[in-house]
Image (cartoon, rainbow, N blue to C red; front, top):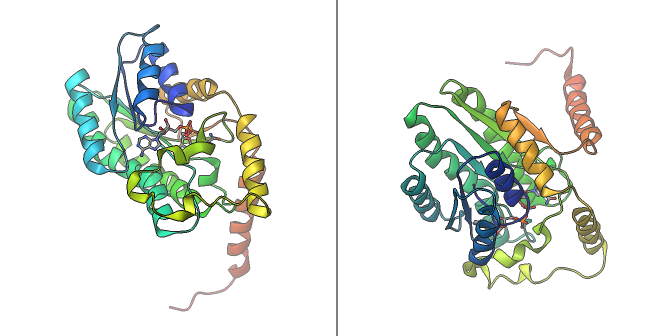
Length: 270
Ligand SMILES: NC(=O)c1ccc[n+]([C@@H]2O[C@H](COP(=O)([O-])OP(=O)(O)OC[C@H]3O[C@@H](n4cnc5c(N)ncnc54)[C@H](O)[C@@H]3O)[C@@H](O)[C@H]2O)c1
C-alpha cells in the first residue's frame, strides 16, 4: 500500500488493518511511516513498513521484494501515493506524472504477477481523483489522474479473467496533507524554481486558497478507507466518496455526447 503514512493512504491502511489484513505500508516519509506503524499496531500487530520513492522503479521493486520477504503472498495492491503537482515546467510534469501515474503503472506491472502466481486471486485499487474524470486547470495533476482511470478501466476486464479485481478510487475533497505535497519534492528537482513560486495573489492564488479550504473541510480519510474496503470486498469498478461532483461528470458526458450529435446522420468518407 503506497502513500500509506498519511491522509487517504493511512485511512485505507487503517480500515484494512482493522479488517484483519496484514498491511505493508510504503511511503517516502520515514518518520510518518514509523508513527503510522506504531499507531496501527495497537489494533493489528501484522503491519510493517518499507520506505520507497515510488516514482523510482527500482525502489518500488525493492519494496515489493521486502513485502514478499515479510509476508510471502500479496493479495491486495493499493497504488495511492500522490502529489498535488506544481506549475508548468518539465520538472513539475516529470514529478507529478512520476508519482501519480508511472508509480501506478509500475506498481501494477510488478505486483500483478505476485498476485497472479499464487492463484488465490486478489485486488488492485489505484487512487485517481474526481480530477481523473473532470479537468479544471491543474494540468499535470489531471493528466496523471485521467491516466490512472484509463489504466484501471483497461486492465479490469483483462485481470478479471485471472481472478484479480481492479478498482479506481475517485475521491472528492478529503481532509489530508495533499496541499503540502511539496514537502516530498525529490532533491533531483529542487533547483527548478517553479515549485517555490506559488503566487500569493491573483486568480491562481485564489484557486489554491479555495482548494485548501475545501481540503481542510473535506471528508475523513478513515471514512474513505472504509469505502475502499467495501469496494474491494464487492469488486466495485469505481469508488466515489460523495455525490457533489456527479453533476460535473454528467456535464462532461453531455458535452461528449453533443460532439457525437454534431456528426449524427453524416456518412464518414473512407
Ligand atoms: N485529499 C484530497 O482531497 C484528494 C482528492 C482526490 C485524490 N487524492 C489523491 O489521494 C492520494 C493520497 O493523497 P492524500 O490526499 O492522502 O495526501 P497526503 O499528502 O496526506 O498523502 C500522500 C502520501 O503519499 C506519500 N508520497 C508522496 N510522494 C511519494 C513518493 N514519491 N513515494 C512514496 N510516497 C510518496 C506522502 O509521503 C504521503 O504519505 C493521492 O494520489 C492524491 O492525488 C486526494
